[in-house]
Length: 484
Image (cartoon, rainbow, N blue to C red; front, top):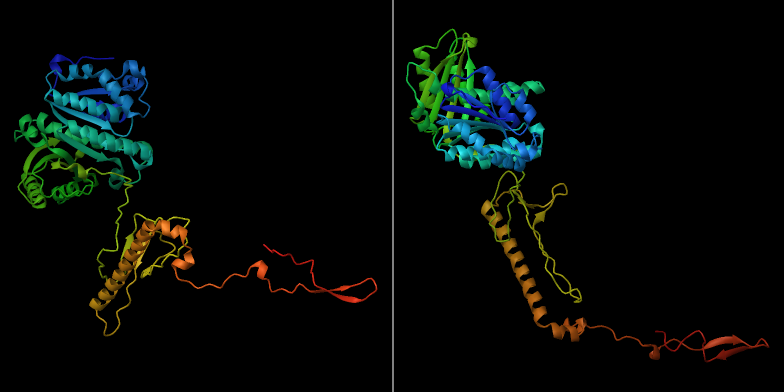
């Protein structure tokens, strides 16, 4: 299901929506309108393509999925994109210099197909910018984990990667209705693409062309976006402050960034030169350096007295991408040789990562030495060692306490060492141990056993005769010669 772009309307900027989330975002951009860009939707779901208002549509995996979706399986989305990658290349080969790839990460088609399309665009020498989203938390762990994997993959093939964490949108817009939440996410993606594209496509008093934007975005790594909107007195400062503290920045500090795109849009009450100066001065003071700022102005009648500011800061590392539900517990392993650090207010809590047991022959009979540690354990906290430090008494210095603890630990280490040596000696003299009783090895004195033949029990008994005469019998029938 392929549609050719009109030759006379082909733009140097293409915006491609991949999968359900990416296509929804592009549909929203198409309705909202971005000047002088061409829109393309790519999806495995034929029904979703039919419902899209965008004219250029590419069905991915036509024979693989037969018009159905990828079933939330990124590998299916990847194979589907490979099957129809020539159709994507054919669209991008027409007068294209820059491509935006939008995708909602976490599903099947967007997560799997977007990196394949990005790789093809990059191999064509196009300036490739990916704008992707991480799912809302309520969408589940599986989708979030798949989203992180997809982001790591697409990052390899793009010049600039802009990540929008949908969960952060709740900090911006609060508790929206279900449908409104996804619509707001689409609007954020549209704002990002519009803010970058219209710096190039919309003519302004300050001329900014594709080469200027390419300088900022080419091989720039992870990009962060902040938006702000304000009206009334001091609207310029309020808007730029909102943009630089936007939750969309993922709590990252843009101080020190070298390249930045700045889009300022105003309505009927057009922004003044003084306000532009205030915005530029504030940005420079917050960044702390002299960044290369590419900025443009726009007009939106719907804003009225408001001004809107969009900031795209580039040059960040992949560590700035939020990773939700981090499950790796930071564990610290300590041994008896670790130094003890004194803390005045509370004793240190240390997690024990591993446990070990000394192996010995179960047939051997020897007692185990007891290791005395100055350790207290709490029932409610497992695998925690609390180094108990006595309260500071009059005349006792902190150094003395440290010495006592060190001495106790040293004694413990010596006892442990002695125990290991004993175990080693046992292994070396195993033959001797097997042939010599344990009480002799330990020089224990025991009483000699009393055997049955040396019994001291009297064998005499009294019996009655038939004539009622009492007789002494020397053989007691109830006593056996060998009691064993």
